Length: 466
Image (tube, rainbow, N blue to C red; front, side):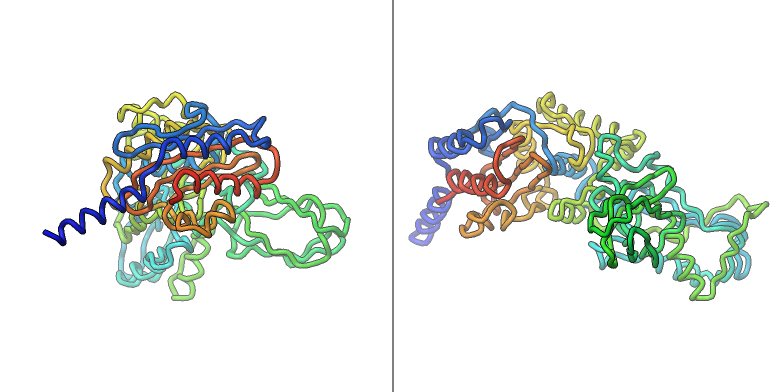
């Protein structure tokens, strides 16, 4: 009896430690909102009780503000709800034609499924599809392929990038498009030597056959290189000026299928499997499945993308929810599925303006109220392995310099979002067995981002600090 009483006292003490005081929470928010640097800012803030759904403290909770990467929580929650945490992308490889002796009289066809993680460096333990194909051919004794290696990436229509993205983002390693067959994170290294505006020793590593490099830099000896990406050509265009030195940029790869085919061809050649790369006139109307490559489970993909804020992974999820619900795999159709899902769960989606999955589009907007209602739903209704609270990273050093010195650094889990003039955080407290959700979106403040983050720290400490 004594032990039971002590346990109850301990639980009550834990609950009291985590419980909020509405007045102090509102005071912390008001202090933040009334700072002089916030005079011209747009902001939407809310803190809510998960079990009751009641908003405890807020500021403009219904105002729609630019979300930046916090939009990833909306896309991820939708994918987890519709597809399930155990969902895996399946990339299939077929021997198209007759297999006779050691010869495939036809083509090797790789059927893309929109898997954004194929060959990703962030899942090193996942099977290597190139090695899977090699082993499958060796097991069948195939040493000659009369036709070609063909990639079917029709599941996701052209273009790979989102029309709402800024053109200046497309060339960089955060602005990669999502393809029917993505590979190796849709990235490559562009390396070159520059001398008085001229370049030599140009190299793409890994190689990307078909991607050209165009030099439009001035002869000025100054380190001010910019890169544009022309998808239609396709070409990486060097602009601005370069110092006389060696450069190594990580850029978006607009031809991931070409990279995969090139990698596969080189491995097959090393292992004495010959691909003629010719059209085969008469191919037997048979196809043999030789590889079914599985991605890691969706819950692990979401954990990775939320931690690193991976735009391309999230765009893949938005296309997947469109495709798996019977629609063409476009961003617009994915956004329509998102809207329909949360309406069906009783949420008012009128504050939600979604144009991509990742939040890279500045046209994306949302309100704090929608965020907390969605986060509450996920925590109350979804399986433990699919709850965002178990997949989000801890606050750690993601906000300012004050929070890391407090227990809240590990007691808060969140998703951040930032771009020019935008700083946002949405998440849960406490990290284990969450009792509260919060959303904090701020646009167009005065002052530095560092000062802004420190004030956000103070506010969160004022709300959740013990």
